[in-house]
Length: 255
Image 1: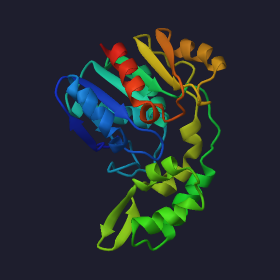
Image 2: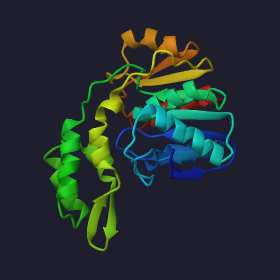
Image 3: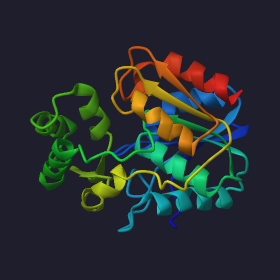
Image 4: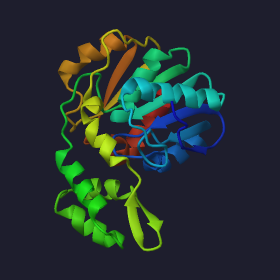
């Protein structure tokens, strides 16, 4: 168990938001502020080996779920709403299944409980090249990453991991070695005995392939009280691509 870094916004019912693989809590700041304005106390967490949270050689969904429970104990949080996107969604599923008394409602964004084969090879190679380079400017980093990742949005998302380690020297916040080493863990399926019977909302992007029609049976096996909502025109980054629609679905469910 480690002490996770967080940004806390607003006052009210606790809403914990868990980012996806290679992300950080800060990715959710715009939506976090909107939820805070609506009367929630929003906790934007950096998961282990990500953002400003500590690095650890141990990385699997069981220990990450324990990190969430530990964070809630430290901050005296009860009856939380737990929201997770992609890898953060898997952490949220595991945490809700392991500590059901802690979680009142669960929101899972564009991920199902099934196994996903590793599919970040190009991204990991790009980040490894960034790590090795002696970077002195963000534009230099962007140019370097462009040869690995053509999509502008993905590149900008990854470049948020850069920070000034010393004057004139950029470095990555991510624990790249461990994330590379544990990439199989990130794709792992939820254990078949893991169940959560309280209200659960799955929000998927209509154009994303992460949740298919075939996954619905497996979702309901683990989460018998789940509803699955599709946001038209959205891909995997549904919360960023269709923010107003995403916000209204999440608010409807939470209220």
